[in-house]
Length: 547
Image (cartoon, rainbow, N blue to C red; front, side, top):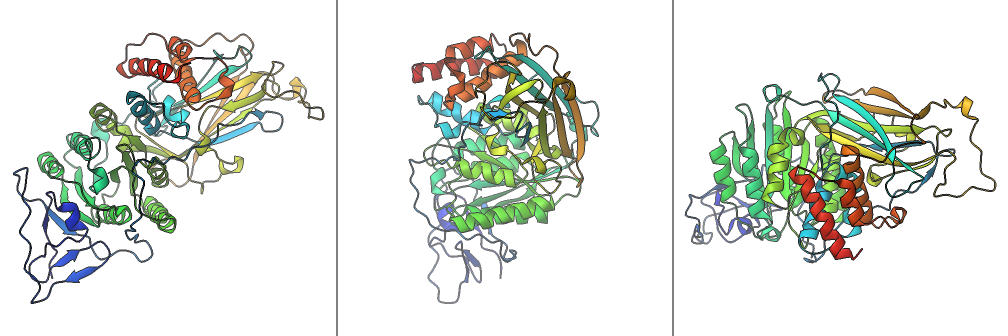
């Protein structure tokens, strides 16, 4: 028996879903859920489809039949609303009283998808849904002037700075910035990448599959001699269209000939992609699946749980997952972000060829090459210096205090050169806060007993990519200047402006009357293209919101 071979023309997706074309002899017909062998007397094959591009047929192999029991996720046909996008929004972080909750713990987040997706809404003339906005992804979309680490063995620098809050004279902003080690090109490990491309019918629009092709073609141009790429597609079922190669022309030709149509067997596609990644594993290298889709997986809740279980199992074996989101209407961001988090990877939304270049070419090393995993931050505020605080963003990255020292708890990954910024809004002790005094509330300890020269104690815990035991970095944030902090300027002002932008889009009532025009003024004049675009987007949001 030999594997069936099909052409990836307009009939590719329907063939993968089990269309009428029959293979020769005792070939396997790919139907998505079972294997069928032809027998003598079977009807003759249908005429081959016309290759409208004029390119030679691209061959698709049927999925290997060696799936691990219990981890196969069969395609499930579920009706979807093409006009409904799905987001897992969280409520804005509440204010904390330092005397009762002095410790804040969260996992880092280097995803940027929320910013690009928000930009897509604004450029199309609409404000984004509040659930689609994550402030930390807004802030982390941009680069800041943090010190560069000198050694790979110590992959981070940790910076802190303090400023007066532009929208509230009673509070201050504390910024914590991490800067990852830059990995020189000559030191990059070889990469075994599997491009997993959704070619289902929902991808048949100009902002989906054509943009996927452009994005992945750009990444193919960044390959080194030791890197290799395989391409897997899925519609009604999954198939491999390109065996591992580092030939850029072959990769681009294979991508160029993909066509969309059919239902969406996302679970089966991921399973096959992981199998291909395992078959071609590079010991000591990067082994990663890159999923490009609108996130419209036709799987039910139980199958989604099995999908997550499979992703976590592969993550633990060293195969990671990056998700790239595309399109509008039925975009399922909730799925995209969730599976990237469970897969020890990252999530980006691609709304243009420029964004594709930014994520997969300009920031390719950050996207693909992990320098630290399970990165957690814990901040303990000194009640003698800070009476109340709140973290701007990171709602879906919150951890329990006891999770910080537990190396079994999964957290975020950081790629080469990545930066992570967290901004707290804090109330100095004695200043007017958001929460009024309690009649029976506890009183803070005397200043002399709680290190009056300290504002906070910052701890960072991380593991090296091949490590199982975490390492610890600790920093004291001095209280000097807390009472007389100046207004933010430079990088700090821009970061504060982006944080305010995210919070305003989310409807944060604690911003008061701080307007989009105030945000643009705080951002100041910028020479960087992406920062200039941000200022233009504040004007768009201002026009759409009327305030």
